[in-house]
Image 1: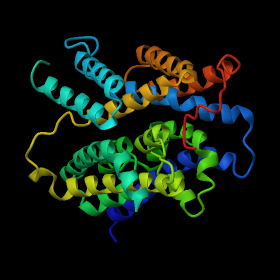
Image 2: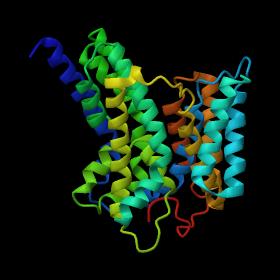
Image 3: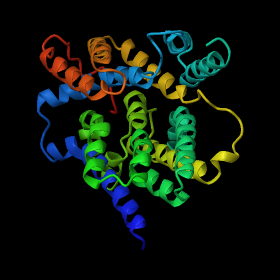
Length: 109
Length: 233
């Protein structure tokens, strides 16, 4: 094996191991123990907080400070919200928002 | 098997996201001169989109393994927070337990946060297939992009918004359960504040940390109704 092959294997293995460590951390901490009430509570309240953070993180590269002021993302998200409140169908909501976004970046913005 | 059909239905929005982002990653790997086997192995073992993309130029310049490890830690630190909601559910899953833990990506997390299991369904099997399908979409996308990415001529730019749309749907579902509104305000507030303070590339992990602290401080004020399940089971 060439050194570059060994380097690639080491790099991929290392990045995988660090990622795995981060994913496994909460499970390792509370291995076989009964969960403390605070952790149970966090298990309930963290998901909605994390999901809204992920929404904002996924549009972080939108240009909010200059034209189009993040309007592409904001309008598409508003459409998702509207369609989902009306139809309550995940596929329809996701498709409507995505098509709207793809059209907007090709036409208006 | 009905669990497989169910899991496929739940993961369709992720199918589009993962195929597209995976193909984009594969094309980058190909342009960087790496053979498809490396894309395949990265997708199989790392299974973390943004980190895989970030590490391409780092590998090209032969960055030290130490730097690579530290970079991975900071980019993927958000994963520290994901397991908390699934500790009790995953550890009942036997041989599937380690697989569930190691493949808990943003997207799998979002599906598992909002999935409503139908009656008569084996929950553990369905949960496992959701994780497995997402993993397969990702491996397929990364490998395909690496082999034939440049042959795909149609312009799919913007389809990655399906991830944003799906995350939004999950938030709306949480919103409908009254007790989940405080965390939504906490998450939104902390990310907007830290986005302004730290900028687009730095705000994620601090926002998670601030939300965690705020939610601990607000514990007594957030009404705890365990009946209103916010996650699996």
